Amino acid sequence: MAKLSSINKNNRRIKLSNRFYNKRSKLKKIIMNKKLPLEERFKAQQKLSKMPRNSSKTRVMNRCQITGRPHGVYRKLKISRIALRKLGLEGKIPGMIKSSW
Image (cartoon, rainbow, N blue to C red; front, side, top):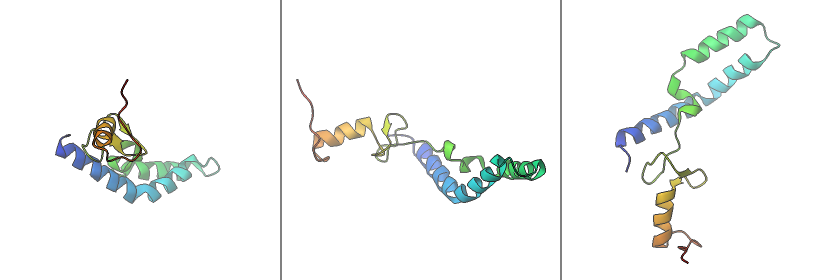
């Protein structure tokens, strides 16, 4: 189990990134638009840099929903490989059986 503080920090980052998503995307469109004057694009860049760092989507880490483990997490399932194996052994995932040879 991961430290609770790490899990809570990541949850805060998720909330911030969801809250500022629209605003950040609008500013990025302005910055990337080469037809606009340089001053307007520069002001948009300054506004973007003044936003909280944790509001960026890249700051969010993929963590296991069960254990909070940061590595070896399947994106579709949102659980780690270890938690997936444990659930498979317990028979809680339909169609998944332990391989043996």
